[in-house]
Length: 261
Image 1 (spheres, rainbow, N blue to C red):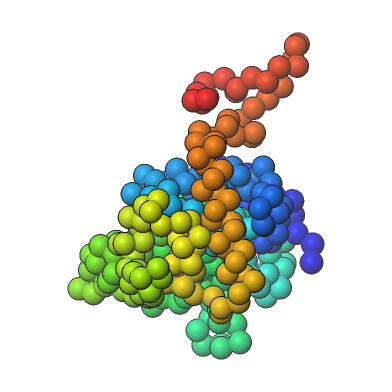
Image 2 (cartoon, rainbow, N blue to C red):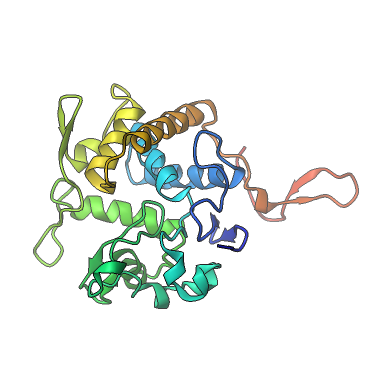
């Protein structure tokens, strides 16, 4: 199925195809690296540790190829969801149809959200969240914010009630002798490996059907990103903010854009 080439929307590289940004295992593309830096920066700001973030990224790379616009079942979307213009909030709010079981479970976004909510506007939980808080669902800022939102209102996270209740997006499982609540995962330090972090996030939050090959790839990805950020802690200037100088062919940052190298 054809899909439009990846492009930048809201500061993120996006493609509706999970493979649209390039490699998905141990050899990330420039676009995937740029998105990974943004995920890391925003989750660090929310208080996640480097180890926890590596575990999240390891799962994201397997689930979506690090494209926040990735759609699991593009063929049932308008125009086969060849482009993000085909799938605005107004279309995707009804994508997860709880009344039609054959359509259930088609994930979207970085971790392939696939749940339904009755909270207004009722429909796909991620898109409902985007509409309520003024986001576009396929921009990564919406999804990192949603990750923090789930932590804050989950019964094993900060457990802040919404309308008198907390939720159970996170399921506690035991790894390395620990029953991992969302709070313990968010605070995971380097005494646990990124590979353990990948296992915890897979089993407790993403919850795919277990497959040993897939699980190992998530672990490999998590270790890769942890090591990558140790070696490259500061993000390079985003390529879409650079232009070629007219006279001497040197790279220059666009006027009034300040980037810390």
